[in-house]
Image (cartoon, rainbow, N blue to C red; front, top):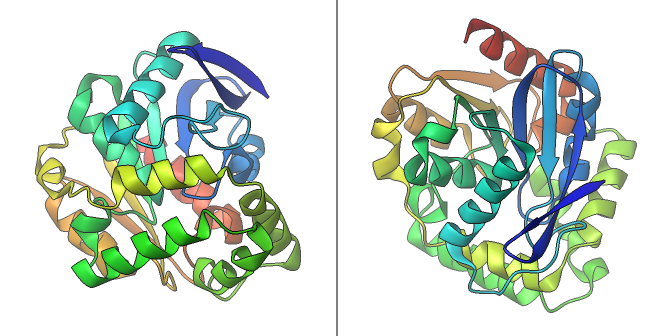
Length: 262
């Protein structure tokens, strides 16, 4: 792990490889460890940077009211500190919403977008009752020991193909969550509706969906694909929400092919 100071708080990250910069943004209850396969597998062609969002992994906790703008400011601070003027940006789940918010706030900082298991914010992609249910669940869980709720997440994260090693690694990462960070991430994005951003995106965009994703179903990706000009959509057979670790070869191949075209 390396780290930089952003507005007086430590932001940690992992970095590997050389080439065009590719920044990886993880989801809720995740951190940069979720991207280890991509850090290993894409480093032959890209300068791969995977951050620990504020309140995750080895990064300092933010205030609970950090908000979407605060997360974007932290991300821009990391890019500035690393000299990454205009990287490719790949966001998974919550990270996809952060990538979209970055496009809204600072579109000149994004060279291309990969949105995996994506949401246009929970409010922008899910029914109001489902948004309310998830918000309540996550805020309640943030006050519980990990062993009381993390195992219950597993069936919703994977499709048909996860190995025991992949499941164990995911549970280990999730179990080291920061309660304050968990709440801050949920509060920042649950009520965010980023659908108005989609037609304004002016960079090449790939959506990657798991065919068996229970949390962000393929129809969510199709709806976003229809609104983002010139976007591409790849659906990965057998994969659930965490397709980057469940079917990493297919995931990485889709990312490589897309970035090669760009």
